[in-house]
Length: 353
Ligand SMILES: *Cc1c(COP(=O)(O)O)cnc(C)c1O
Ligand code: SF4
Image (cartoon, rainbow, N blue to C red; front, side, top):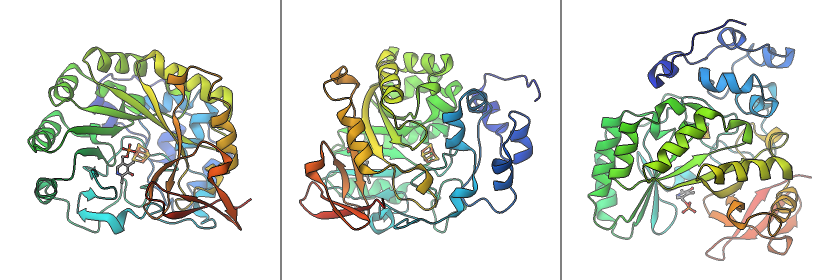
């Protein structure tokens, strides 16, 4: 293991990303299984920032979320490349319009660190089959659809874009009078906390952006991540979290309680606990829905209400996120769990026992 000199500059962190087995082995000792996974072609994009590599060195939980394993080559029952049916709802090259009043703006396909369970692994870090050279068509679509009140900018990770690109994107969206809510979905405060500069905070504050931050485990709450979130909070930026429920990573009550209290302590409100989407190669990460219900019921009433997120299944095929509170809401049909979405329409989630 080398003793690398870390730079606290976010562009250095991106330029020095770990993107091969050889680079990874400079930071950690791989198991035989992990080493073997790099032998063939890795189906999902791979990259880790030096900052996050420092965390996985000390955390078995985090390690599983970013290091490839052979298991991701297997396509399990009901798994799809596009589990949420986003491509059927793609309104423009950059826009997914699934819900009535809100849109998902996919501003980039780049992430500084790639998660092995990513619901958009079909596109993140990959060459695209369609033209995304300009946002113009997307701005026009939002302008013409006056029913859109809520724009969630995601990707990839939008906070890996430069301040000037973000400034332009946010001012164009904020100039649309019927848009009332602008959010950015990001894992940057966790994997690239150096990116949270005063200049970036000013851009976010100017456009009254809420952040929806991706956190998996309390081991991600490094001193750097805590100060990044405190800085965002000091600048008046509202923050919520999204956590994917992952087998062997965070699927136990103490791990969730630790994470959710840790988030409240840095002014991030736990928002969603997401049942893991049936994306290709994710079977080893998925818990049963029954387990998810047990876990969320172990939190409701037992801990601070503010620390409890909503447990949701994102209905495969594009039915939207469905909050699940108890067993009464679901029924089992063979390998599927069946439930109703917000429009009363039936959806199924593959959940082989
Ligand atoms: C999650 C999601 C949103 C935002 O949903 P909220 O429940 O308001 O957080 C919007 N569009 C799509 C396609 C989504 O998947
Ligand atoms: S940060 Fe989000 S978009 Fe990027 S790889 Fe992870 S889950 Fe996917």
